Length: 453
Image (cartoon, rainbow, N blue to C red):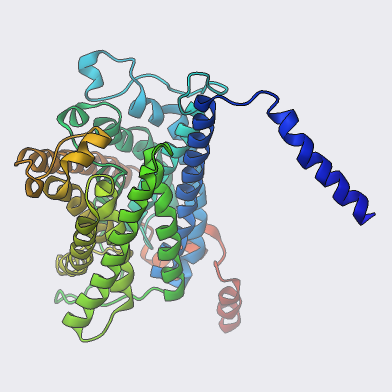
């Protein structure tokens, strides 16, 4: 019986090329298929980063909120997918507006319906959509850092509607969709500004309006550390995000081509590695102990910073960018704590401060050769390009960040006034697992609580 099965399998393997490829594919068809496969793989990797965000937020917060973190992430990714399909993708990449209007917003491709395959050798619209949707979902998950442990579930729903339909897409259109910053030559290869800074700004608006968690700061202004419940979760989340980042950065080449995606991946790895090392060393130097959280934040900051720069800089510059990011995130976290801004998962420092640095770094280190290869902007200041590219990079950070903050703040302020933004003190003390969902993410804890009563 086994022998017959093996013979059948062998026959299928022999026949399959004859059936599937009765006519040899042209080089154009072959390249199109490989590019489509590569970008689809990138989309899967970026979407799987949501698993990293679940573990990052859950591990960095308390046990009583772990189930809430996991559940709301799945819910908001689902809602974001529908909203981005209906509106967000069209505002980002729609080009049916007048030339003057198209500099600021895309119009068209609403309720997007991709063609069933392509014949002109380009990337299928359906795959490009899924890839871009995954990016929008990442930016949204970054914003949730400012909501952690104290926001109503209803606020996640409302914010998702506005963030994914308008706020994120407008910034993405300006830089990636042919908008006015793209015309200026803004270099943001995979989203240090578009994805990470925009999400971090949403987190900033949220944490300002929500105010700190109960017990985070004392009346005299001193801070109390509220430890996350599982540092192993947090470390595993960083590894998942690190791997997913290769879809994020290298996938943004949207083609296999001459292997340039490998160079982008190479720079990504160097930036992340340098960030992790810098995070550990700076914490060891300042605190006298090698802090694990600082190491993890350093790795993520290196990844965030190199995201804008990975296709524009030489490897040595990728290391410098990562090292600076690892140090910057450490002092940025201390700054926000001193300002009494409660940032449970360090979204403002990891994605905000490092996102700004990564974007500006192109204005310093971008090479003429790589800028020409990508077809965006020019060389940076230290590569003989003068001040122009540095100015454009600063401009994109200020304008995109300013727009995102005003828009996010207005949306959340209206939510706060209309239905309330923060849970009650009693609900916060009980935990969002129980108060918002009726059960704990760790059911054994519920049993212990009931037994103690």
